[in-house]
Image (cartoon, rainbow, N blue to C red; front, side, top):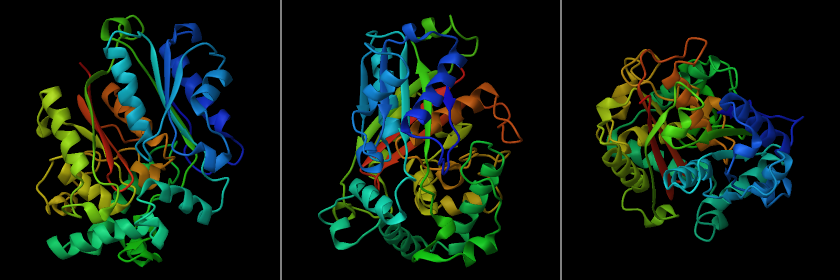
Amino acid sequence: MGMTEFGELWDKGLKDLAWEAGVKAVEAAGIGGKDIEYIVFGNMSGGLFVGQEHVAALVADFMGLNSTPATRVEAACASGGAAFLQAYMAAASGMYDIVVAGGVEKMTDVGAGQAAAILSGAMDYEWEAYFGATFPAVYALMARRYMHEYGLKADTLAKVAVKNHYHGSLNPLAHFRNRITEDEALSSPMVADPLRRYDCCPVSDGAACVILAPLDVARKYTDTPIVIRAVAQASDTLSLLGREDLCTLRATVKAAGRAFDEAKLDRKDIDVVEVHDCFTIAELLALEDLGFCKKGEAAGLYGDNQTYVGGELPVNTDGGLKAGGHAVGATGIKQIVEVTKQLRGEAKNGRQVEGAEIGLAHNVGGTGATAVVAILSRR
């Protein structure tokens, strides 16, 4: 595995980011470029952010891997997770032995308004973005409805932000490494009621990469292979207006159900979780939709620090999207990198989950039109 720093990386372009993550992964795996048989890269919108389409071929070319088949996968903010699924199927099918799954996005070369417009393509443009809706706005609708249905208070959202900033402060690759207080979160500027600045993830540059192989092949390269127990993807309506329930991401529910069935595991078996917290409300919804608690009960996990490293269910130990950063095409792979570090006991600076054996990664596209859930274990 390999990963760049996430953040406003003014001195690095799309090629630089993909190359850095890819080289780190290849060197860590102890393989040569000629060993790589297939490349899958997630990227949401290279064309609009930096004018570059045909991203997978670009990656292969820039890494000196010409003639190696390379495919770009796009599933909005779940592009990385979807790329991971495609790479998993390619290796598990027996068609290829050494497969690269990566993700990259260069987002900060455009202004905030243009970035928001580009990202709005991940929602229903005709029925949402065309009328002025932004991602903070549509997630605010979900948060407000959740507050109405389940009595959620703003201080719980603040607790989510505080926890993720704490974990981000322990991660040298995180976009934000500053710790915050609940008061700071609750007094930060309003973005879309009830979501404030600290409820929203940043726009980030970054890339991440992992290398997959059938288990018997992987054992030739490492004594600590991480086993993919399951990867599942599901879909839902693109727009909120078609949802049965604004407080439930049905794609997450379906993908999680399939993943746990395939892995033959229960929720209590999971030691560490990476969820798609593009907004603080999204983390609460994810924990419920993944089945770690009942609908409306996620807030109870934050009262006694259960979601911190050292707690009963450590969540987003790298800072998540909120503090770790959200380079949309790379986020799903970034999550896999963090889970892998945790399972190998390689998370440093006080964020290692002691004895972690099984981990879960959850990547979402848009407001839940796509969800990918992966379950990994030490054996």
